[in-house]
Image (cartoon, rainbow, N blue to C red; front, side):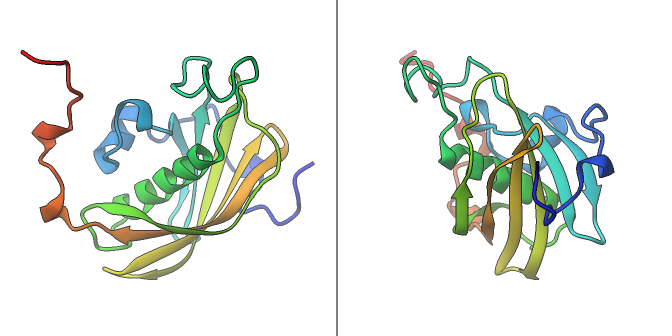
Length: 178
């Protein structure tokens, strides 16, 4: 049973009703290919600073074969990445940080409580704690699988210097020499 201190109660959102699919998420987040860690966004509450999304974990994930052979476990760092992407989506869409691109700024008080495996739906909730426009956003996050809290902590996002990032044309994967 989940703790009482959930960011949002499961009866406050509908996992069957998507507010944003992968194409809409891509409008706000730069991650592509193997690094996309969100499947859909299902809830946004701007006044409360709360957003809920999920990642459907499949056996085709890039890590499933080797982390660990015969016992695939979603790496904790990817659970944190999913929370970062949800926070970035929400902050970018609502221009909370006043930044063109938001990057990972840090983690605090992160706890991994139960494993996440292929076939699970990792439901992630983030809640804005504080924002310093053009400097940093701090969010609390929680990940649930079914009724179990599997990960929680605090995450920080910072503006990335857009001028030092590669152009959109350079973001395609290499297909080898032409």
